[in-house]
Structures are given as C-alpha cells and as structure tokens.
Amino acid sequence: VGEQKTLHRPELVPKQSRSMPLSPERKAEYFERMKELLGTYNKLFVVEVDNVGSKQLQLTRKGLRGKAEILMGKNTMMRKCIKEYVDENPGSPVEKLVEICRGNVGFVFTNDDLGDVRDVLESNTRPAPARVGSIAPSSVVVPKGPTGCDPGQTAFFQTLQIATKITRGQIEITNDVPLVQAGEKVTASQAALLQKLGIEPFTYGLNLLSVYDSGSLFDAKVLDITDAVLAAKFAQALSALASVSLGLGFPTQASVPHSVANAFKAMVSITIGLENYSFEKADTFKEYLADPSKFASAGGGGGGGGGDAAEAQEEEKEEEEEEEMDLGGAVSMFGEEEGGGDY
Image (cartoon, rainbow, N blue to C red; front, side, top):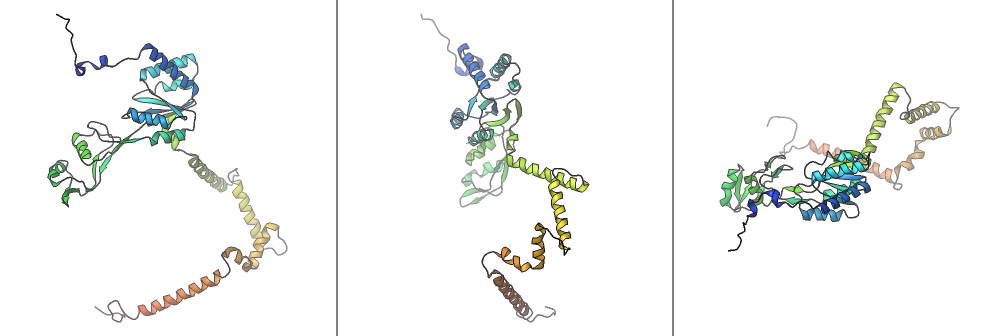
C-alpha cells in the first residue's frame, strides 16, 4: 500500500502559510536598492496605493521613466532599511520617513521638479465601480434622466426610495439622487444600482500624502502654491504695508515710490499756478491745460473722422429718442389715447 498524502484545500490553509516570504537574497537586494535610492535622490513623494492594480502601477512607472522611480514594499522592511541607512549615515534627515511608513504606502523618488512629477502621478487614474463594503473616497450623485431599465424593474428603485416615472417604455429618475456620501461604506443595494446604471463613480490612482524635500517633510497640498500665487500674495502684502506707512507718515521701502509720486503731483499742481516758473516735466501739463486740442489726435486713434462720426451717431440717437417720446404719448397699448381715466 502506497503512502497516503493529506491534501489541503487552498481556501482552508491559513493565509500566513500561503504567503511566500522573501528569501534572504531578495531581502538583501531590496535593502541595497532602497539605500541606493535614498542616497541618490533628495526628493520623494509618499503615496497611498489603495485599490491600485499592477497594470495601472506599471503604466505609472512607464510615464515616470527618466523622471522618477517608484519603490513599494512592506512597512516593516522599509522602516528597517531607513534605520540602517541612518545608522550608516549619521545625521541623515531621512529618519523622518520612518514614522510615515504606515498603511499601504510607497515612495516615488525624484530629483526633477516636484510639480511635473505630481502631474504625471495624478494623470494616471482609472475609473472603478463601487464595490460592496468599500469606503467611498468621494460623494456619489445619481443624475436624473432615463435609466435604460424596463418598467418591470420599478420595484428595485422603490426599495431605494428613488422617485421615478415611466417615459417611452423605460424608467426615468425624476430628480438627482445623493446616493453615497464620502467616507461611508458602499452597501449592496447601492453597488447594484450603480452597476445597473453602468456608473463607475470612483477613480483610483497613486494618492499623494506627503512630500519630502532635502530634509523637509510637508503635506502634498503645499505644491498647489505656485509662483503666481506667491507673487500675488507678496504684492497684496506690499500694498497693505505701503498704505500703513503712508497713513502713519513713516517712510519705508514700500511707501517711498508712492511718496515720490505724491510729491511730484504736488510740485506740478503748484507749478501750474505759477506764470514765471516751470520745469521740464511740468511743461507737458501746462501745454495741455493751455490748449487741450493739441492732444486730441493722440487719444482718438483710428483715423481722422472718428470724432465727427461719433457726434453724428449721438445726434441720430437723440432724434430717435424724441420720436419715440412723441409716439409714446399718442396711443396706448390697447389702441386708445392715453391721458388717464378708468379702464
């Protein structure tokens, strides 16, 4: 009799026994690779990769080729590797990354512009259906309109308390329906409705959590502050400082240009009132006040007869208004003469 073997059904084998741990050689290779990246790059994104498939991750790697490198791994291995790197390189600021290795996260290393890399990461998103039990990353609203479902499925919509009507042989939703709120779990009925309507409400991709840049760790939303935003904020603050300085009579670098401009205006206004004194910059203003017609051609633009044409149009408009006023008092909207009286 041959030796009997015990066969185990895969679904009954504990998960720990099915997972294949990395061999010592693969671990050593992973540690060497991560230490190399930590030493080569001084900037990285900490990204969350929930609901991101291998194909989508492969397409993201392809889009980042030549700009950045993606490294995934178990949190324990990543933390241990970072600690070993810090021990080998005392004083290295990458120690801040140890505490952020929580959840399903990975690193995107780069030395390029962070904004360009972020654009590539955010562009690689894929629509996904709502799965039962998953947490909704955003609110879902089912729009009103025809559903393509036959009238026999009306009971399904009534169960979800969705107002409908039958139009041209199909069910039509009468109002927009807030179905799922962000942060809530998707129920079976909600998932079934979205699947029936062919709606894929969620998009998944590498979610940017934090940014590491030369020892500084900050939220990824800071990248929304562009140079244009900084310039506008600086100009606004400079204007406020100049106003305060002028109000207090305390000169600052922000208020000096305004003080010089105000002094020039005062000098010109005084010079205009003097007959025996003037200076070069004030001569233009004196000439304008003496004969404004000299400067008429400079502001008119467009060729010569513009002023006469404008006057003619104004005269025609006045004549039309006078005719309308005369006609308005003659007859009423009912064909009778206006002038008071009861209807």
